[in-house]
Length: 80
Image (cartoon, rainbow, N blue to C red; front, side, top):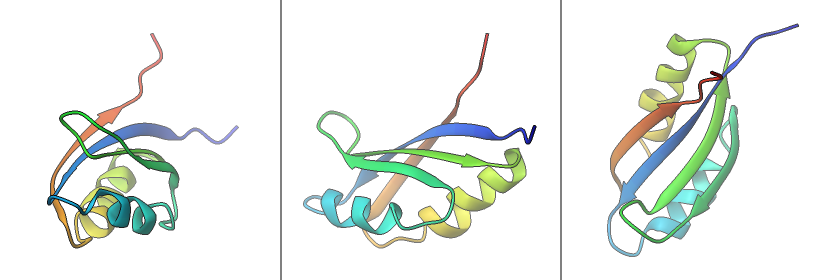
């Protein structure tokens, strides 16, 4: 069985950019879901990768480069 790491990525965007950011992120390989939400974060993404390094590359090289994103917080899923 192939093990993967899953994470929620909480994203803050520039005002009025949440829907556009979510629509761009959902097309990235490894992203399971991306939705714009209300509250302290504007978009919440669920993503998966083969390991922590690949997850980091997904966030830094692909998600954080999208125009309109001001901050991300990555929360890996743990199974206790």
